[in-house]
Image (cartoon, rainbow, N blue to C red; front, top):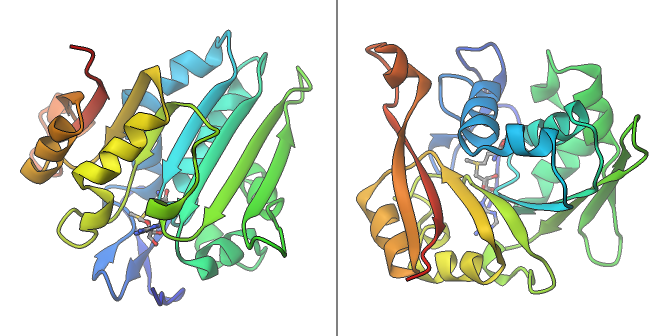
Length: 247
Ligand SMILES: C[S@@+](CC[C@H](N)C(=O)[O-])C[C@H]1O[C@@H](n2cnc3c(N)ncnc32)[C@H](O)[C@@H]1O
């Protein structure tokens, strides 16, 4: 789907996002692109504390690579830990221009990014045969690797069968605009590649999302956002956490 790489929007934490003309939505909450990656996907999922002292190789699925914020926050968290195990991150993205832009040093939404984020995103290399992208980043203390694979194409067709995920960042556009990535079939596909302890987190608490998770045998709970916890009057009040239903 055609995307303009110039419709930049400054979010409230100062990080840049884009507005997608066809979906008619921003890629991130106006509260902050980095803020959302950090507070929802890393923090509220439990990933940050888990990865600091992980005793196993973790698999993370990044649904909708977009501008790369969730992917790069995942790598940043892993780097802050001891790196005692490898981590495998798989990002799904159907717009090739976004991945190419992310790998490009001239990419305009990287303004204000740390040198690490720039370096890591620019280490993505395209496989000319498949069109997919890969990066491998080494932990400075342990020598272990963060393996990052970006599968380009419709996420519904991605072959994930050889993989197992402990964390899923469910970050498509809104259920109204991007319904194929919030359907029962989609959540069944995710279930099939999930580790028994998987944590799926997402910003949407829409009825359709909760019903479709339920329909695909996921349990779920709503979580208060930092704004709701602080009693701040503006912004989103709830996010969603889901895990596999066992009974
Ligand atoms: C809200 S944005 C994701 C933002 C991103 N997580 C980040 O951290 O910057 C949603 C992304 O999902 C992608 N997308 C939407 N439908 C898709 C599909 N069927 N298959 C693969 N990617 C899709 C869009 O192109 C867009 O980049």
